[in-house]
Image: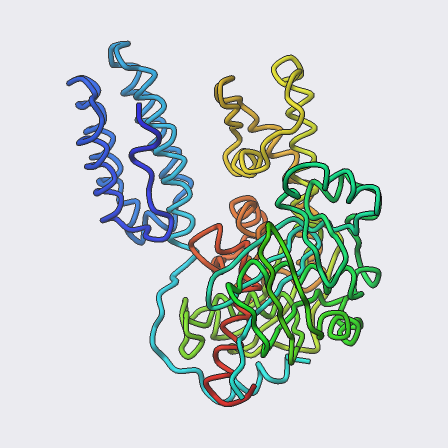
Length: 129
Length: 344
């Protein structure tokens, strides 16, 4: 398995990057049909769960726990072929998703164009020595 | 006057410097080499990369410094002298300025408790530095210097856009009261901002940082996997960082080693102190938002978020590596703003 082909760019966490990363993974990874089927299920589950909706953001930990159980169930139902590959993929996917979900909620770092006012400038100057 | 602006965050764990040409960080450890040490080094074809000749004196940084003798890492007032703080700044300038630069305007950050040493900081840094490394020689003159509180600069990093001229980030950290929790390598600081303005009369520091957690995790991992790490001298610090966040240590050829319990235990050393510190300053009910800053804020964010139980917890940036550099970048954006407004 290539080195994290599905890694998400930490500076662009969005639903689009999740989809793109998953598509990239599917395109790059030479998984067999069964692996692909499972990965598709994971992909659908992640997106259907609304990770990036307001509700998803507000109950991230619950959603992740629920999703982890669901994925574990599905892995159990699958054959052993490529099991390790899939487990690695899912584990890293969840790890990255947890990071993104937290960061997505915690940071809205987009320049909003609003100019710095004189009151803030004054406050900055007062803080410098 | 035209200045070249540079910002420096000489932290207790790492030195972070930012200029328009780029940014650098290197470990906080520096020692002046003795005559015999220099002779030994000069027997090789080339001096090691971590050796710098500064104003005629040889210095080693990082691991080489630690190996070269005691006193390589200084803290508090002892470090604000030209041969330590000044030399570290000179090395940082060498790494972020590609040419001789005569008109440098430097912003240096300090912790709340080190504010009393601001005159020493300026006296230690504000001079001409001739730096040589790997056959390259550059001259820098620090023409002007100001100092600022480290956690204030983290807040500016979170709220000022790249050019320093406009805002960025969520309105929620610029409206109402915001507690800024800056978890560095060895210290944790708290500052308060009201409606985007920092309360310069408030703020405190505690001697506890994320390096305490990383050291503890390293010890616990070595104890749990003593057989696996028998031949391993040092655990890769970047992998330790990831392990603290994820509870899994990527041991390369040895595979992924579970350390969820150990990561939790190691993190608790810092998180429990931080929660008490935050409570001493009023806790969640006293602030509309909480901003987590610094490398420790990045690494421990999930555990801190869970612990402080506040609805509006933010990070200074969505890129964890940038969070480590937050005070230096915030300082640089502050200088950009001042320069644009004619306030330098």
